[in-house]
Image (cartoon, rainbow, N blue to C red):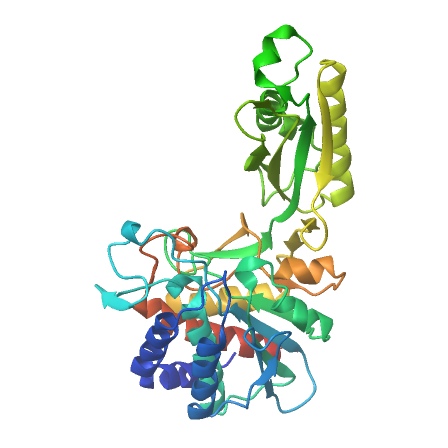
Length: 416
């Protein structure tokens, strides 16, 4: 992209640096914890900012009134590619406030860092995306095609009221950039070429419900004890029984997380006849629900062959939370190149191309069978701060993100 256009973008953003930071503070100050889930106040701030910055009037898409998604369409000068810039407006709950050294609901700036729940994940990105759009419009930056801003609800609790609404209404583009925080040691030092998917379910173990005073008389199978034995086998040995191809972005393979939910027992005086543990299996590209299910069923079958007292069954969660496929974009894709070039222009760094360990909203497009190239994570903030006490984002990284998003978008759209 021509240097004068880049300079024009940066100048527009630098002129409004204070506005951008004040806007970020206001977004973080307005709670949107999920659960319970209500993004209305945040969305009201965004709509007002769109008007004051000269952005097109946002479209409001929702299943329920208190769970709005915003779509802002910026049309180019002619036919060309389309690009979605995505961020979510909800946050995880604060949790134990005693773990925070600052008030999570009263954002403040200390030593160049903006503290508060949702600052890194991901209201800093929301401000950055809108500031990027403002710079493109105010700077009269030419491009073809269409830039689509999608600010979604409910990402932190399954996306039923969020990106799934967008999918159901047919919002697709030639590519999508999800602006989740991607920094490992500093903002934008990494770019998520892929994100893990997941298989969620439980293993139910059956025993003999009976009076606990008779447990020493024989014929007693304590389901909770048997479940504990299976849980340990699952934790230690399941991974070696999973079928998957080695992947350069995930050299460690999938992640097995058993015992994320534990259920069992009736009350004192009763030997439990049923107990179960939930598992959260993070899968890598190439793995499917069918292959994972088969592997776990074979694993449990072999355990039962070696223990006549063991009766265990696999239950995969019901849709839509049964499983989510992994998402991956080719290293050579023009959007990846555009992101890398933007980081080099603004920060002088070339981000590490990696597979992020978590899942992002792109998994829902993949599960719907939509073959859209998606960068899973490239945004300001550190991954490790998401959902954590004393969450913060560096003030300068919000301003930098606006420049990076604008340059990325224009570079991708102009090269079509």
